[in-house]
Length: 87
Image (cartoon, rainbow, N blue to C red):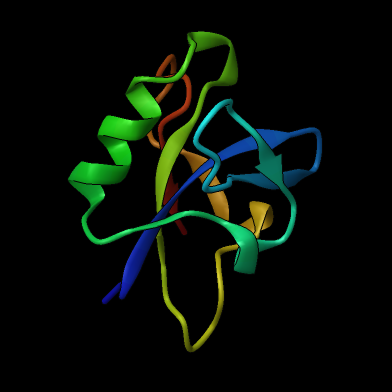
C-alpha cells in the first residue's frame, strides 16, 4: 500500500513531480523533492487545479521502492489523457 501520493506528469521519457512551491507551479525530476499528499483524493484535487496543458495526475508512492518509473506506467484506457495505472 502507498504511504503517500505525489502529483506527477510525463515529459518525454521521464516523470516530473510537482514541488511544494507557493507562488507558481514548478516541477522537478527528483522524487525526494516532490510535494507529498496524504491521500490520492488530495493529490488528484491538486492535479485537477493545474492548467490542463500540464496533464498532471496523482501517483501513489511506496517508500520502500521509491516512485514508480515511467516504464511501469501504462494508459488506463484508450483516450483517457493523463490517467495512468501501475503495471
